[in-house]
Image (tube, rainbow, N blue to C red; front, top):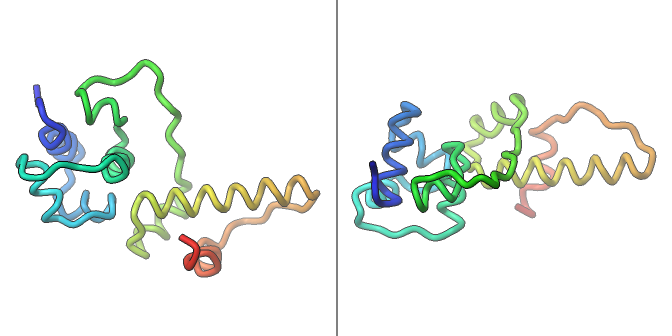
Length: 133
């Protein structure tokens, strides 16, 4: 059983069939940082750990302790069209989830004002809000 955060990250990454390059890109970190983490040469901050967990669909509890908590927060489901756009743009998991959350807030505000919801053009939406991300 892996005993360090880096060992757990490496195990989960290999279970998912991801290379270090692929996981680093999904999490918005450098490959060298990921390599150093997996080899016990670096420690990791909470935000980066959260990004890695989201990129690999595991909880912070699992990454920190190797065990899942009984109180799991539901993971935000990234719509397939947003996932495709994010991959095309090279967006990190954090930026992708921020974009989704921002869009949902706008939709909720528009619904409260009685306006109809429309299909999202993620490129147009991202161009409009990227300077705020």
